[in-house]
Length: 230
Image (cartoon, rainbow, N blue to C red; front, side):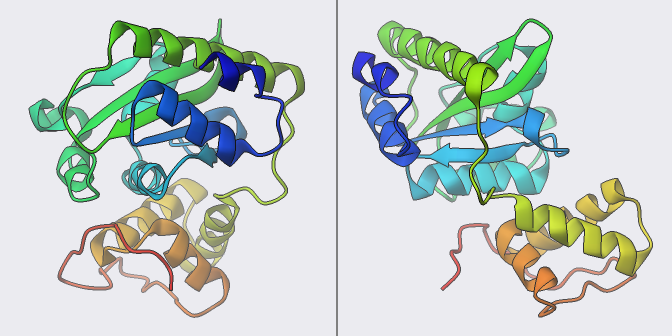
C-alpha cells in the first residue's frame, strides 16, 4: 500500500486501483465521487476490476448502498457478509450483489469536515472481514485520495455517468418529469429489464429506446444486472 500511495499522482488510475486491491486482499476496488454528481450514488472515477464496476453499477441503479452511506455519514461501512444485512437497510442490494458475485463489501468515506467527496469501496467474492492491517491501509488510501482530489482533482475527459445524465435530461423532456423523477424512472427501467443503467442510458441517448409514458416495465421477467454490452 505504501507503493500505491506514493504513485497516486500516476495518470494510470486503473493500475493504481488494481495495486490497491492486491494490497488490501480484495477482489475489487473503486472510487465514487458524490461531489461531482447530482446522484446520491456518485460518479464512478476508477475501478480495479469488472466485479467492482458491476457492483458500482448496481448501487447506482438502486440508488443506495454502502458507498452512498459512507459518504453521507462520514463513517466506514464494513459488511463482511451481505447475507446478514437486514433487508430494511439496502432493500434489494444484498441479494442482487450475491449474483455478481459480491459477498462482502467495505466502504470508506472520502470526507474532510463538512466536505463530502465520495467513497472508496472494496468488494470480495467470499464472506470475511478485513484484517486490522487491511483496514488501516484502506483508511490511509481514502485519506490520501481525499487530499489529492481536494488539492488538484481534474475530472477525466469522459465521466462514466455522463451518458446517464444525458439520458435523464432527455427523459425529463420526453415524459414531462422533473430530473429527480426521470432518474427514478431510468433506474426502475434498468432494474426491471436486468440491464446495466449505462447501457439503457446509451440506448436512450442514441434513440434506440424510448421509455413508455405510463411507467410500465420493459420486461416482466427480471434478470440480474450483470450483463456487459457486446
